[in-house]
Length: 167
Image (cartoon, rainbow, N blue to C red; front, side, top):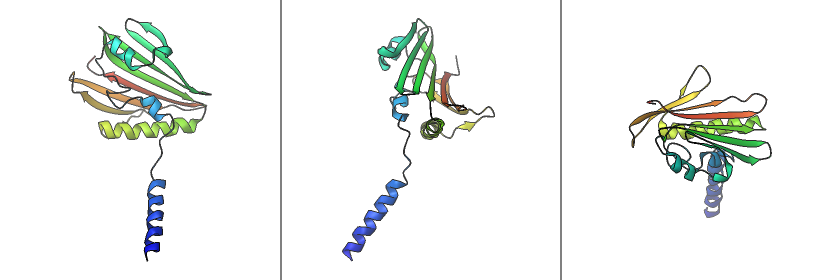
């Protein structure tokens, strides 16, 4: 009897973990941090705080109102992150990710949809293919929209745009 229960437990344990969906291998890298609205920064942060949150080695454009980072993931896969500022306050973040396999973009789109649904409530699917979430920054009391699209055609491509709606 003990042996049967032991095997039953092993089988149930295996089923439980085999049904847990696995995130795409790039998800954690693109998300970077679960703090802030995205990648460890908040809408309203100053340019110096945003620079500290990113890796300076990949900074391509460093202007008074704009930062642009270009990251390589591995062969054929990369992403860019741009930050727009007005009066030294961040008002927009855009991440664009490029993949040689469309399946990577499809899985990342699902992973980020699940993540944003969990953190901001159920997203709204727009007619233009974007999925969007509305939220509020408690620190600055600003209205924020997170919008994401999977625009994969000949290669994998997703874009995530986070904007201050009060700007």
